[in-house]
Image (tube, rainbow, N blue to C red; front, side, top):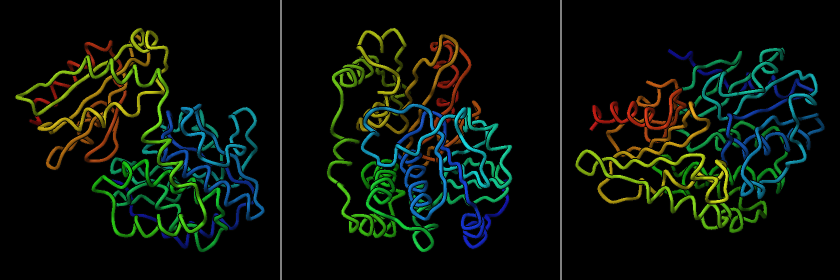
Length: 320
């Protein structure tokens, strides 16, 4: 069982004490991980501290999030007083940043995933929060400067993890924070359009292929699709252009659980799951070493894609 949260007061004390701070999100970072990290780092920089963000290469659409000048590589990262892990459910999900995290004197874990393991020296995990960006705003808005760039990053994280304020994790407080961020003069329409409306031609073709490969299973309660590296390449794209697929599948009427699998390698498959009320897909992902939220989760399965699909669907069948 994860330990109880440390207080904002204790975490803020460590933030204000630090002169050099490193931040990182999870591997294959999404809008919330990127937005939270770059916004937090920007606020630290504006306060006179040195900050660097360790993130894997991410999709071009996230270029709308400011402060990318703060990105560093594991090779160029400075020694830091404090390491902030944001939006990362466990130590392994830090990827190449893990070893640097473990060597840093003060390590803080801030997240909103139900499956978080509490791996920091200090931890704050709120599974009821819409996003890690929402937690970051609550944590820093009284102690660090939030300019237009930082507000844009936090807003990006909010809208990404709420699906444009559609998911049930969206609370009145989420909307109030969004309003405060909009007051900073952010290009909120451009951010929203880039995340939910704009796409490359290859991304559109990949989405079409995933829909073509989709099947309804177990009396129409489950939708499942797979896509291989060869199919992604035939569309002229990369596996950084797959974000929209799982939510599109979940939108099919009558579906209770959506599953999407893609090849990372010939023997390693990424699985993404979405579920309605009463279907805990976080528990499903945890059976394969993954995690996330009750209604949205993922994992990596060490098997060829056909076998990985078979293994996961055997567990899904028990759910439905």
